[in-house]
Image (cartoon, rainbow, N blue to C red; front, side):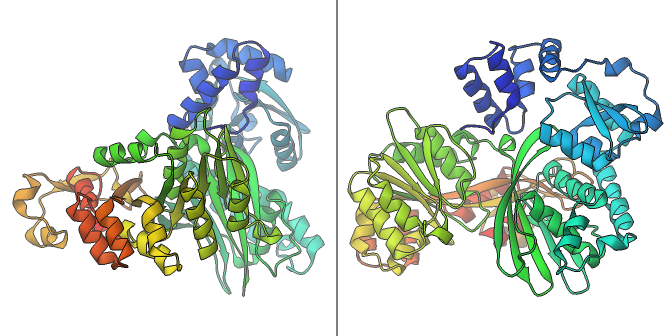
Amino acid sequence: MAAQFDPLLDLLVQNGVLDKDGVETIQEEQVNSGGKTAREIIVDGGYLDEDSLLGMMAAYQGCEIVDLANMELDDDVVNAIPASIARMYNVICVGADVSSVTLATSNLVDPRVSDEVAFSLSKEVRFVMAREKDVNERISQHYGDASDSVADMLKSIGEGMEGDESLKSDPNDVAALEGAANNNAVVKFVNMILYQGVVDRAADIHIEPFEHDFKIRYRVDGALYEVKAPDVSMAPAIISRVKIMANLNIAERRIPQDGRIAITVAGRPVDLRVSCLPTSHGESVVMRILDQSATSLDLENVGLPEDVYEQITMDIEKPNGIIVVTGPTGSGKTTTLYSVLRRINTVDSKLLTAEEPVEYDMDGIVQVPINHEVGNTFAKVLRAFLRQDPDIIMVGEIRDLETAEIAIQAALTGHLVFSTLHTNDAAGAVMRFVDMNVAPYMVASTLEAVLGQRLLRTCCKDCKEGYDPDDETLDRINLQRDEIGGRQFFFGKGCKTCNGTGYKGRKAIFEYLRVTNPIRELINARSPTLIIREKARELGMRTMREDGVRAILDGYTTVDEVLRYT
């Protein structure tokens, strides 16, 4: 997988520290580490020591290096920039006067970031370089705990905005709306919303205006929680700011719009996919956070049980057929598919993908974004794929008969096809094809396997407690007491780490249906989903409920979570 373009790696190539293979090695390790920056990998891996790296960066930026650890910093100087700027861009102020500030950073400064900071502060900005550890320690020292300070800052900025009448723009006055969207307070507020979303590892940020209310919510580990939002009169300015960042038309509020935002948060590049939806009280905005550095795309790290892992690694090496990943929106299907593609992405195979949208860039794979507005549909792209001499094809989703028939045709003509379906379980995917009016014999002859999955919230490690389940609890998950072997069940009491929910992080559960000859016979006979599921269980398939029980017994999650999602 190719990480986002990193100017630090490019600098090391220019200076002869890395070659192309070295860059690819660091990018792969960055993906697999689940959040490590390229800089950390460079230093920890011995490619270059911290001081040498700092010297190279300073020479490139044309700025000096300061010893931040031994520097006396006056509170007035530090407070010359707001905490929101310090945390968003990972900088600390080391010098200030009426017209300018000097900021210490440990990162190469993107000109766009420099312009944003200068605009936000209304001052000239110059940068100096300092060790990453020193910058982080000084930010923590002067601005305290991140979660508390971010919440306080959002509240403070929001209250200040409410007192500014110029921000309460008429949504029909585009010039006034643009002016409000570029107001310093609005810029800071939106930046802090994005910062908190990335730091909390939220999957989505929801900005929703109602008649008398304005909500800002984050989806973390599959659950939404709300943060303090300003008055609903501020909604047009805040939403317009997001649309400007995503290069969308702020004057158009009658039709849905989609865009992307590329930002740097705490020195880490992050992509946001923006969706604007017209409602009766303004536009509802949802931003999907695509933080590639926090996502591992190794098949070993997806969390597959050992037996499922062994089966799927054999099936993905087959020369042709269809393999489907199924589950609801947000169940991790895309991550699983990308992990599979990464495993089989070799020089001697041509891989093509059709996606809506392309979420991760991968070296060596031709990726085509679907665009319905210009008629670039899954079916049309898939037809074109067959003229591109592919070995392996990935279709983001099979939604209709036309796409299904082309995918099946591709499988019949010697291609391996991967795709997703929205069904409740693996067995349901079989009959989903039949419901699309695909001939059962075509499904039986091409479908090789179906992987069903869900994401369950895991117990927070900081407040996790064990207990002995009573008989009623065991009955709810169809377990006998002798089957648990004296093991405890667990739950989270709720603490600061998990925002009082008792859950922190998520774990996938799976069921893997291999389409063997007995299953093919049932498909040809148009047998219902229930019959196919029971036959698959007879042949050794473990259902998602059973895999969820395994997660309970291993201490990962709770009974309530398993019952909620299976």
